[in-house]
Structures are given as structure tokens and as C-alpha cells.
Image (cartoon, rainbow, N blue to C red; front, side, top):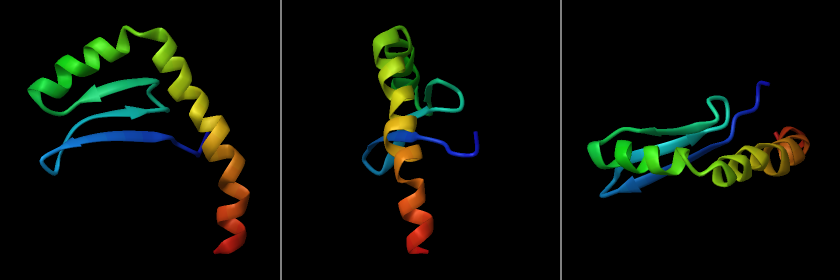
Amino acid sequence: KDIQYVDSYYYNKLETNRFDSNLGKFVGYTAAGVRQAEIWNKDTSLIAALTAQREAYCLNNVGNDYRNI
């Protein structure tokens, strides 16, 4: 529960939208980002794939990161 997967998208150094595994959806930060987030949030297979990335990438590698600190 403490581990979070975040996938951010930028345009001209400005964050337009972001996927947050704790929320389980995309959040838009600009007008275009909000529109794109609404489209991506309707795609349940994309949401499921990105939510699975938390377990596949984050939880699988957390032991390696803590061991190297």
C-alpha cells in the first residue's frame, strides 16, 4: 500500500497528465491533459495494465532498491 506507481506525461516541460496507481486513473493538469485523461480513463484495459505495473515493476524491485541504499 505504501508503494505507488506514477506515469507522468509532459509537453514543453509542463506536466499535462499523470496516471497514479493509488487513484487507479489518469488525472489531467492542463485543458488538453484533462481531455486526454478522460479518454484514457474509459479504456479499462489500459487502466488494468498500468495498475499491474505497480506489482510487476515496483513491488518486484523494491527489495533491490532498499538493499542498495
